[in-house]
Length: 242
Image (cartoon, rainbow, N blue to C red; front, side):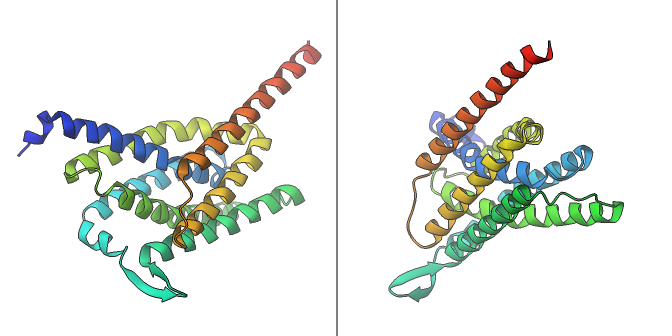
């Protein structure tokens, strides 16, 4: 039953699929890092754990119903000659949600709508964060698993790739969230990434695929410039403090 374990081709597909899942998980890491930034440190850590655990459960659950998942790509509606499936509807809804959330957070940052929160407000805020993570996890999980179908023939390989990718995402999410929280200017950059990802999801849902390589290159280049900015500010501040 485990003869596939000794097959080099299957190991190659595991590595390829794991890398793909990690790359596709960048969107999720950015969203979770931004969305938990308003919570206290301990609560944010718990929210991040719950968010990534939900993402893992979604992906494994979807792998268990592959035949149903493939059915999500079947056309259910045709508008002006363009076919739309449930997958398209999920991507469009998720993209619109990201556009709304990122725009709302940018407005808060610009207007400075920071307010003191009571314990009740914090509980409501925590529940709201988990609900938002739940929604976007569903979008990213569906897109990720549908993309993965066909790259591996064995469900065991797909599950292993998803679990490894989620472990890497969990390890990376902490430093990313801490960096965003300690450098407020990077939060605006992360929110602009969410706008970009939202547009890409809507475009995919409308049948216009934007290669993810272009998006991730733009994100990596912008993040690199911002890191240089942060280092430059730190170096300018150090002599003044001496």
